[in-house]
Image (cartoon, rainbow, N blue to C red; front, side, top):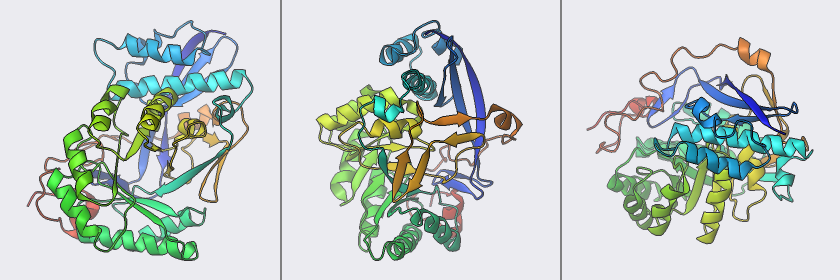
Length: 393
């Protein structure tokens, strides 16, 4: 079997409501989802999710190779980007191809990926994550009620701009999940998306912890700030979660050495091989791992095979346009199916017909760091906190 080509596709996730975080909001709730399809000479194709940056250059490292040598090909792709570097979106393109290769390998063997990787239990524990900073209280309650009806009893909210607003929203979601769970104590997490300085993070979380019990606080300061993350961890009761924006084992090493992370995260777009390597590194430090991202289906399969998986992020309850997934969401988790590979079916005609947002990277989106992030000395107003367009005070 040989790799003969690839196709780059782009579909959308249609949330039907605004989505975003402390850095900004997509008001129409339409987010692009880039896909890479890798083709072979035996008619087996694999699907991965991730950016389309430098694809021709990266693909040159695997063109004509046997796709079943996935981990060796992963390292070839890393070497291919040696001079310019593989951080950021380039790492995502490598991850997309990597997941597609795992998909091909499992399909060639007629097995679901979770079985091929050595998983025994196809169920993967999940927590709800609604990208919800722009929602009103009523909208927030409706959103998390839908998660609760699927059995989820843990939720991660976006916040970090207004401590009292965060307290109100976390309390509301706690009550929704408690009622749905017959008074079972729910788990709560808060994601600041790198919006705070070190002192802001400690002050904000300590204020919340006067009335709330948080499992973790995610990305309280910049992703690479090992000293700062460790300082925050020492100053609060909650665990510190980070890693979704780290691209390569070398970026995790200083954080682990500094004791700066309690929950090790990896993003779905970075690929299966990266997740497996990070999970092994975290396990060596007695730390749990948690996959992050929209539709992390490749990492869900991989999560079944590692001993330190904690819980995986569940964002939208519906798949992106033109994709169908062989999994179900029930009893508080994902249940993977028996389809060979990762279980993604792609309807390319439907994807070709879907309308892409005119300018997904426009100013104000969550992908652009606000000018005053990390320099807000006081809480923003509720209006500003909900739009994510906060100013310094």
